[in-house]
Structures are given as C-alpha cells and as structure tokens.
Length: 140
Image 1 (tube, rainbow, N blue to C red):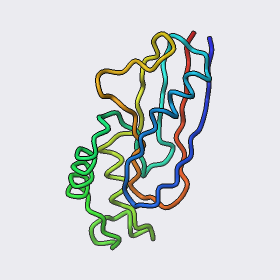
Image 2: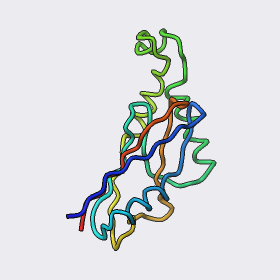
Image 3: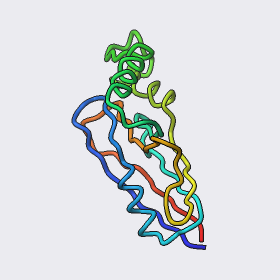
Image 4: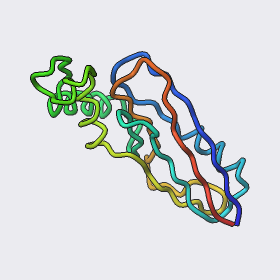
C-alpha cells in the first residue's frame, strides 16, 4: 500500500475567510502515486475547518453571514464562557463545529473523485496566525 502525509500551512489575515485548497490536495494526490484509494484532509486546529462545497463567492458570503449569526464574534467573557480563560475566540470554536473538521475524498484513476462543482476549502475562524492542514493519502 502507498501512503503520503503532507501538511499545508495557511496564515489567513482576516478573522474569518475561506481558501480553496483543491489544487494543493490534487498536487499531493499526484505526488503520492496512489491511483485507487482515499484522501483525508483535516484542519489541525480547533478554530479552523475543512469542508467541501461550491467555489461560488455569493455562497461564501452567505456562509460568513450565517456563521456570524449563529455564533457572533464577541471577545467579552459574557457571551462565551471560553473567553473567561483569557481567549477571545469562543465564537471560532462554534463555527468550526458547524463547518466540520475534515473531509474524505475517494481517489479514482489517480484523481480526486468529486461530484459536479465540488471543491475542498480551508475555513478559518480565528485568523492572523499560521495554522496547518493535514493531507493523508492511502491506497494502491
């Protein structure tokens, strides 16, 4: 069985934003030499996410508005008990929980086996510092 472990690092300047990482994951699949297998992509930080959806700017803006409505940024310790520890990112933990930690994509004939319009995104909810994404590929 072939395998590859690779990390991608992102430093998103905004507190919340989405980065299309499909080409980075495609590169890792090619590097792995796996033609039939699975590709796991997961955020290695508890205030970031990896998810699959359409690369459509209006949808991304809708996500940002919706996530902010669900878990608004509020640095004070009144809204989020987590912020009583000296942190200011209680909202980011909730946003990550909603958007998810990871995705698994099949590899077929050496390529990510997507449905129409599917792309892989890194979601950042407490930006401004370097964070990692793990890409783990296994197969034949």
